[in-house]
Every structure is written in C-alpha cells, then in structure tokens.
Image: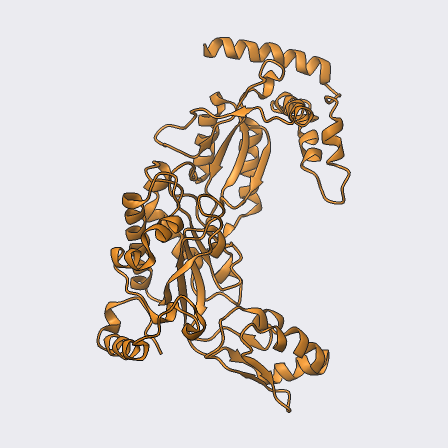
Amino acid sequence: MTEKKTAKSKKSNGKTKGKAKGKLPDTPFLDKLEGGPWPSFVTNLKRLAQSDGKQYAPMMKDLLGQLEHSYETRTGYWKGGTVGVRGYGGGVIPRFSEVAEKFPESSEFHTLRIMPPAGMHYSTDFMRQICDVWEEHGSGLIAFHGQSGDIMFQGATTENVQKAFDALNEIGLDMGGAGPALRTSMSCVGAARCEQSCYDEQKAHRLVINTLVDAIHRPALPYKFKFKFSGCANDCVNATQRSDFAVLGTWKDDIQVDQEEIKNYVKERGRKEINDQVINMCPTRALSLNDDDALEIDNRSCVKCMHCINVLTKALSPGKERGVTILVGGKRSLKIGDLMGTVIIPFMKMETDEDYEKLVDLGDRIIDFYGDNALEHERIGEMIVRIGLVNFLEEVGLEADPNMVNHPRTSSYVRLDGWDEEVEKWKAKQKGGAEKTPVAAAE
C-alpha cells in the first residue's frame, strides 16, 4: 500500500511541476487576506509554493488549493488519524485531507510539536540547522511558540515524520506534548536578561520538565496539563491565564525605591503625568507623591501588579526577599468557561537546590492527584471547582493559608466568625513549624 501511495505521489509530482512551474493556483479568496495592513500567512505560503526545485513546492501549491477550496465551500477538510514516532505516544498532530483526490500533494500534512529550549534561547546557527532539517523533510513552514509553547513543524508526509524527528533529535531537540498528557512547558527569558526576574525560571523549567518528561511522551492523563514559569507578575508567558500550574516570581518585602530617580522622573515628565500615569493607576491606592516629590508606598496594600515598576523602571524595582507564587487551574473555555489560576502557595523561596526540589515534588504530587481523580476531558481547574479547593489542598499535602485571601473583609466568599482567633492559631503554628512548610507565614 505504501508503494502504491509513493507511485501516485511521484506521478502527481510530475503533473504539478509541469503545470505550475511558475504559476500558482487561482486563489481569489486567499488573495483578499493579503490586502490588509498586516503581514499575511498567505504571502509566505505562496513564497514556499514558488520555491521551484524544492521538494516541498508541490505540497504547498496543493495546500493553497485546498485552503482556497475550504474558503469557497466554508468547510474544513482535515481529519485526524494515528501517526507517531518510535517510542513516543504523542507529539505528532496527524492531518489527512478529505479531498486528497483534488489535492494529492497535500493529502498528508502532519505537524511535529518540538520542545523549545527553556527561556526560548536560540543561536543563529541553531536556527539554520532546524530550517535545513525542515526544508529536507517537511514543507518549510515553521511556527514558533504559540500558547502550546512548542516549535510547530507543520507539513510532513507520514513517511517523513520519523526522518524529520530523527534529524531534529540529532540536534538535541525532543518531542513536545499532545493529547491527554503533560504538555510542553514555557518560561520567559527572565533571569537571563530581565531586571524584574525574581527567580531562576530556566532552572525551574528544566528541573520540573526533565523529572516529569515521561508524562509528555506517553499520554496517560484525563486531559492536558501545562506548567508555565514567569519571572514576575508581568507574566510574559501568560501562566496565570493559560497554565494548570503557574509559577510567578514575586517578592515579600518592600519595593525598592530610588527617591532621586523618582524626583528626576517628576522633573522630566511633570507632576500631572506622574499622578495620572502612576499614582492614580495603582489598583489599591498604595502610592502617593509627597510635597518634596518623594514617592510614598503603602507596601501592605501593594498587590505587586508591576505597573509602577514598569513605568518608573529606573526608580523602582522588586524587593530583595524574592521567590514565587504558585497558582493552579488556569485555562481557556471548556466545560465551565475561562478560569484564572487560584493561589495555592502565596510565597515560596527559590534560592537553594532544596527549594527547587520542593517545587518539583509539589508538581509531581499535583499531577498524580489530577491523574487519579479528574474526569475524562476535565482540566484541573474544573476538577477543583467540582471537588472544592479545601479538599484539593488537603489531598496534595498543603494547608489553606490566610494570605490566599486578599482583603478578606471585602470578600463575600469569606466567613469572618472566629477570624481573629484562627489568625492567632495560624501565627503560632507558623512560628513553631515554619521550616516544615513551603507556605509563607502570615503577617
């Protein structure tokens, strides 16, 4: 059967090259997508299709034809299947065409999800190597770092999937996640070059994923599970909104202030602009400008949103006692709509190897509990809504922390009867066993 397919492919190759060595299929619908002010993917598809002499040009010509046909009929013509590489249960997104008789060269258009390096660091030599691999074995079409975090090598025949992966593996790359499994992780550039970073994101990323990598390669979960690592609350990898386990850099003490630089900002921009763009933009009114142009901060009210630090970068920076906040359950719409991550650990130091080992251990425990207790096609955020946060915390070995509730007296979800007594109990407990828990002591 494979031989027949190959023969058919060779035959259609000849036809496509003969009729279209310089000419693309007519695509009036796709052409409209090139008319806007922004660069269009259609332009790049056409460029690949016109790369005469390249093995992928016929595939891209037929891909343009199938896309045009989809726009004309308002119908999608891709179906799934089973395609993989040896030793792996996931990582390849199979795509077979339902209109293969019309567009034979794009009848198979599979995608390989490949894990990027932590922090998304690349050398130009590395980029050239992966492009060479995909020009030889694929369509030449590559997409970088969507919400999946993967490098998406789009457009390979079934025959070439294994060849492409072997070549990419030689460079040092591994298959990413797909299906009901741990998915590819993401970390911001963070400590490598960002002054706002509060921990070593790349170290945390590598330790967690290297420990749990088997859950990526061999899908065995009820549904997808994602880790993401951001160095501060700017959250450049959307961890809070788009990951099941978000690790966000934060600090526990006061914001660092250079008052001379604050005064320089006021002198340069004027009091009105500083008031309008910084002071009045603070969500908890924690900032005020004194008569001598010094900045006063009520750090107990600060929610570490990063806005003032982003605007007054020379004058403000995160505090010195740094670590991470851990949130669980962020996701896009599925069973119960969008969810943002829920704080399960308000503050955890990330200084020693032991601190990072605690993070890995927590991730492992949560993955295990999710795998054993979630319903099919249920994300962990939805599972927590179903079973209750208190039950979840108890089962993964964490205690509820008063710091998880911001401004409790304004929250309609918090009962205040016995609050003061419980806080005193918590303080006493933390003083007696602070070294045994990763959870921050309540003030």
